[in-house]
Length: 190
Image (cartoon, rainbow, N blue to C red; front, side, top):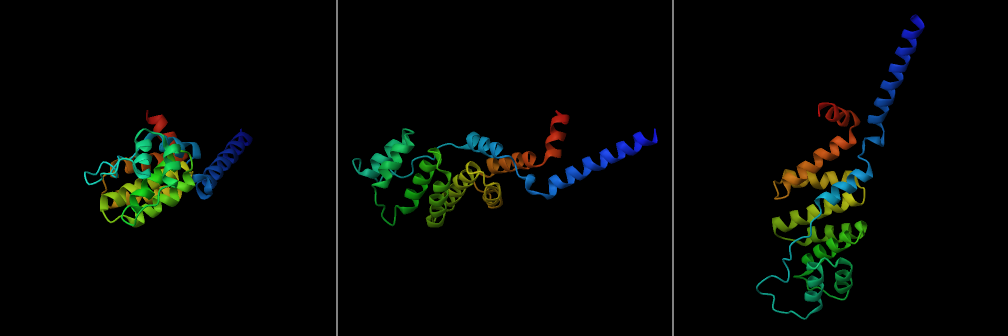
């Protein structure tokens, strides 16, 4: 009987050591497939703020063609059109936003991150800056970069942006996915 108690105590100690090491090491990250599924559940194309502006009169330019393809969901073709377009300084922020989203929807998350970061730096309006951060956070999720995604999502929540509720929901899902004990407790609670 004493042997059984010693064996059980040793087994419990090993299990606790394993769980402790889980929290100490890099395994506290959410699995990449979880991050990717969070991206898939939350990605929606951004509304066309560019060529739907009443002051926009040109309907035959490369910019208009690229945005028409974007509106139709033809993101790879829109990218090709955007690559032939040379944005003015006034248009550069929107250009980077839509090119970034096209890269994101075409599965080039790392290129999307570059353009979405630049868009956020160029925008002057609060709403547009936060929208860029939202898509940038989604790009980080798509790329499996949890730390960066969490940072951007926290910024969105902190400044009370329009996307704060979705950002907060994603942060909670990442927290549960990266913490095996919370995941276990939620399963037991259900």
